Image 1 (spheres, rainbow, N blue to C red):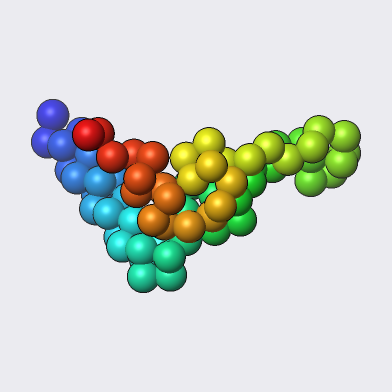
Image 2 (image 1 turned 90 degrees about the horizontal axis):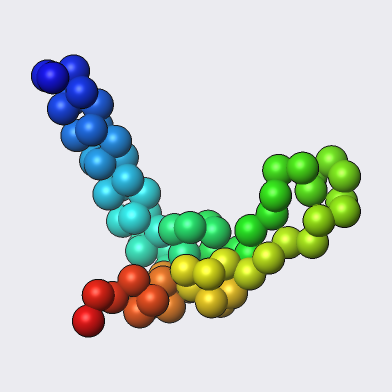
Length: 72
């Protein structure tokens, strides 16, 4: 269980670093500030249109991401 706990702690610290980096740049952590997501098949086929990021409502800003993830 020690190895599993170590992995989970590493994963959590990596996620927290990602969140703080995106906060400094005022970008949505889910879509990296683009405001939309692209399916991986779309990069080659260009048949599936990109869809708006549901976490930041398509704005790409960290503040909007924070508002949508606020539990209150």
